[in-house]
Image (cartoon, rainbow, N blue to C red; front, side, top):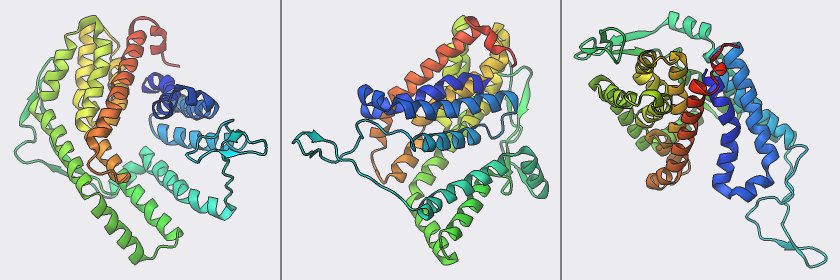
Length: 358
């Protein structure tokens, strides 16, 4: 269901992104590659999510989009290249853009793409449920949090029946996606010619560079857990659940709010997934629709969560401008979340056939 809800937005968002940066007219100048990138992502996203399963959906879709765009740009060029270089005068004295012809050797292209291929392979492997289960079978540590585990009780209407909320820290170092990414990074570093000491030095520099980002992300994760176990999330969710027939729209915004607060679509689903199902059942809506809407709406909240903004400012070394980034992207986040809410509303009442299994 998430794949069906996000398919049209996978095509829309690339257009929206370029429009936001260069304006509508310049976006129209490069609409063919934008369309290729969006469709090449949307089609496998829909097909894999509906005919295979939830695993590896965006990994395969992203690879498809990058490969399709790269191949398309082999045969297509914009009429007016977008560069910051000044215009030059041709033989007739007419100003025309400077065309910068660049060509890389096959070895350079291979060297540039190989780390990404290695990363995609390891993320793909770590995304296979059987592999994760096998790694957890080797070693995983589950540690109940003292003073919190099963000491908070959730009751209706947040859940169907009263139950004690578990608080168990799952230390799954082997099956964690980050482990696969770490191994891919080490292999890529060796491929690129780094020595063991060189890799250690680079990791040390990187950790120092993102030290404040890591602290901020840790604090935001802490806020997410506090709001969950304090019942703050449930209180906000119940307030929006009072919207009745308009709940498909506002339920989507609950997912947006969850990701904006916690920084994670997964965390938002943990926080509000049960609430979405129970509320949908109370209102006579499809619970699968609203559970999916929580995740789809959350996708649009990702751009304004503190983690994403801090990582963006750190990666671009634009320190201290987090507020400017938030102000720029906030409108786009809200607008896209509203559009997703309208689409879910349409699924609930206007074209309910989209709820049927393929």
